[in-house]
Length: 86
Image 1 (cartoon, rainbow, N blue to C red):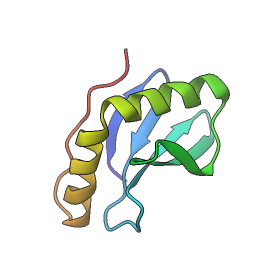
Image 2 (cartoon, rainbow, N blue to C red):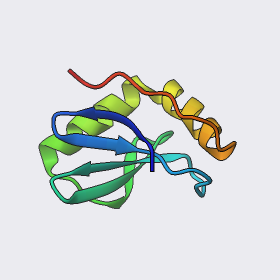
Image 3 (cartoon, rainbow, N blue to C red):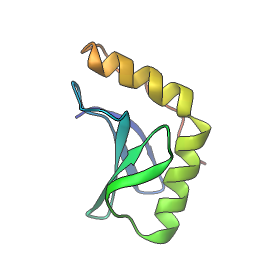
Image 4 (spheres, rainbow, N blue to C red):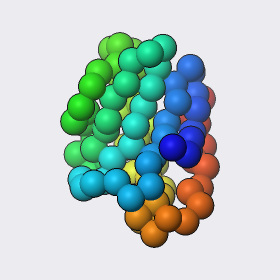
């Protein structure tokens, strides 16, 4: 699973050939969540409150890039790194 960003101890990844809706995976300290890109909400799993806020804010700021990576992943092409939250 390619890592597309990492910040504040949070790892953001996206699988190739995933199912809809477009989403990304976030992991922090053993906690995992799947985040719907378009709706900006967790669709599976959970993260601690503060880290969840960071992930959702980052996802909103980079929605276009995430959707572009979603299309690349579906086509099994190399995913682009996305600027981390600082």
